[in-house]
Image (cartoon, rainbow, N blue to C red; front, top):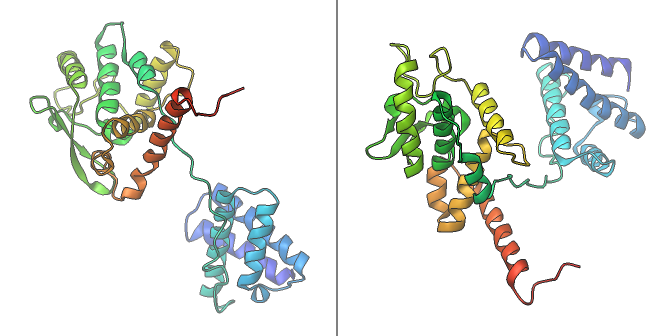
Length: 300
């Protein structure tokens, strides 16, 4: 491409840094994606941005995929190119955006990992005692009992939990509030933690889960406590707070088959988001079939 065409990339990076306040890391990522496009244009004999059309970009996406680039990376690359062309249109260097409507190959949907019920029971059986063991047990029981997100649990106040009705009021994504049930074992763990919390809490603290200084326990601290107990219990997988949510949804769907109910409990705005757990349920059924059905394929 001509030096004049390449100069537009430098101007675009300055635009990202000064007007859109993007980080240097993001700017470098955009520059790498545009450099790949420049190499493609040079190979096609395209000298100026106006000479690039939508068919060229479809070929560019296809070549990226054939070269082994993952669908998600191609999506990111096309997103950077769309942003660049929008900048050129704003600067009156281009009349239309040839990247509009160009789609990357569909990415395979990754199934979330879960703990099976035996692994979950092993994790939650804490034999140790003390105020912070009681706190950690209450947090993990509540994660699994009610399918809470990390931010939802970290943001809970004492008044959000009704142990008489065994419910918790949760502020979810988009500022949406939902009320979800609390299981019997989680309620018992919360009662034990409430007794310990009284001696730790500052007079002005409304947070349900507190650290050693009596302040609200932050998301990172909660992640570290979960990982600590997973190591102590000898679990062979990386355990993080969202793994409780995945396990909650998968186990509930396996036993109830009520997809709409699981959607409400998780606070998903779309049923399609919840449907990922139907694939997990099928995997569970397939394992049972392979292990027990006389016509199942036998492993060598």
